[in-house]
Length: 287
Image: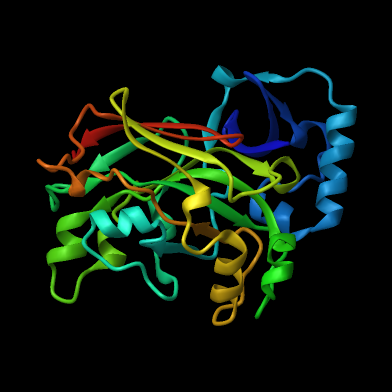
């Protein structure tokens, strides 16, 4: 099932994406939460209500009649993993890490399918990073690796947009701020529920810039797979429903090219992940 968050008649709603239409779950069940995080907090009761609403649904809304929002618009945490593909580590001049490299993005980075990536005047080296994003369903602390996937609600596409000049050249390396300019976290278009994905470690992942393939890999090349990442992070921080985990980017990023390729106003960036979907965003200059 593909769950989406959207605006319709200035109201936040939850729906199920079916081709080019959306089943408005809120219209079928007035008691349905209007926020994806609140829905995930219901656990199995939420899943049962969604299934019942889909069964009872009548007419659907056309995609062009609604405005898609990030699947989880207000997560408590956005956790990211650096250098999690060995070949990306090599192109970045780094040794593959012995433990996951963890940082985070601020929630104000989040944008949806079709939203603009705003290139800030404060940076001239903004880069793309296609990533598989894990959406936590059942929270927990010190989650065992063998049970980690039971805590996953689903997956979505993400673009960990990065200001390399901030990340690399500021004193101490400003990873948080370099990754956290407003609009630097597009996700979507939908949250694909975990039951649709047999193995998150066997998904083709691509990034295209203006139609040219820049990244082309598979999540089978992750150094630390999804279950290991969840166990590692949760050993320190309690995970909550709706938390997002960006799992790292494969090789082909702009900074590693010769000459380097950075995003420019008018560029269109596509992130496509097998069985998950296609996320498309255009770049604009800062106003």
